[in-house]
Length: 315
Image 1: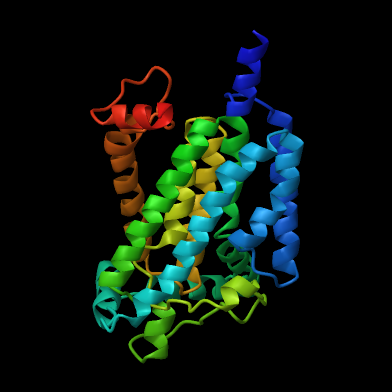
Image 2: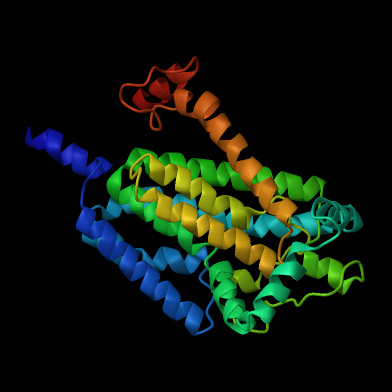
């Protein structure tokens, strides 16, 4: 009995350590908020260091190293690859995506409509700052969701991080083959007009030395990973917290509003992000989870290739 209980805690059984989950979320949320307030970009490399106290408090520090270090390392590698997409020589989609957006909304650009609406309500500057904070939390929220799942059910954590990385690399392929410019880029190049590029006029953001060495990709707008990450997190949380997860869906709505309001994405980009999540969930459910023993539920029937995972584990 004692060995069974120890294994359940190590694997993060459902319902384990709810106080630690709450304290960890409050700690990471507060620390991230201070960093954003002080103008420090909350990137995955910084977040990994911030997770060390959580790992120590959980009593599973070795497990933390095995689960989180590879995840963050691959995530940082993906970020380094993103800059390649802008150097392929493939001309970005600018006029076509702008025309599609305005056609869908009766000749209006949603970014302009939202900015004019907040200006008319005399809340424009406040919304500028709030939307910027939401935008800067791009990496924070997936890590918060990951911590929640890791402390609650390690199997769900592995599913979430596998889906997140797979979805990110699928997005990279799209960025590589079909580079797409965001609204602010189209405005800078004379294709659109009539709205403000808010980022850079509100909160400063000093990135880590690692991110300073990377070349940002300005033509990686479709699909919007800013929109996809929180939705994938919501779906992952629903498996552990069916009711509380709806708070994460509320965050999705806030993110979708913010990226369009800021001129960082079109609504079309947001819809593309949602479609990417749907495709990722389908691939995970039909192809990946049934074939990987570490991702399957204990009572789930193995898929056709599951014996490969079993043999690899026993070798």
